[in-house]
Length: 309
Image (cartoon, rainbow, N blue to C red):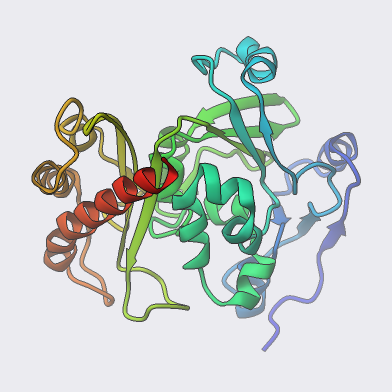
């Protein structure tokens, strides 16, 4: 049954037009339409009631994926206080579809964990509609693309009528289905520093496809002469928000990139987690699962770097 049939609908062609729409609609909470794979379902089921729907798909530049050279990245983002340490940056427009993430050559090369996570999200039909920005902004602790954002040190570029700001991924989610986005703010792009190394993503769920995960692990690993030089570990479904595990990652630094160290990192990641009981899985099962997924993901990332060489 269709619960809501009427609301104000706008489709701005640029950010200036969007700012004008928001200015003439004071006090109205805008509902953003990107892929629509969640919004339309919620409106039809009566989970949400919208008076103002703003379609973002005409905004220019938000479907681009581009690698910005180090010098240009420093010039563009240095004034914002970003310390890129001489690294190039991969810029991903917030309206990029999930399907494109799983197939784009730049994503496959620079962020394999994100490409893999994208391939695990829903059905092909959903991936052709759903967007990266929508998946992140929904704030689900189990969102497939969230843990890779943490593991890859993503920066989220946000726009609002009051100006623009950049937020590190570990400051973006504030609670279940909540983010730091204000009502009138949208995601413009996601920035991933190009750090070398490799990354991996693993997800455990009732089925291998078209299902919400019980738990996921995303890792980044850079190995030099058999020793871990840099690492990141993140989890989905392990807390009320996507969870970064810095202590677990730090335990790998300077140690041989071998199974023993990876197992210990997985145990530390589990110690940092606070999963809940749900109808999909118990807290105890999730805690047992974390070390297994982390170790396997780190082994995959190590193998990925070896293949790159």
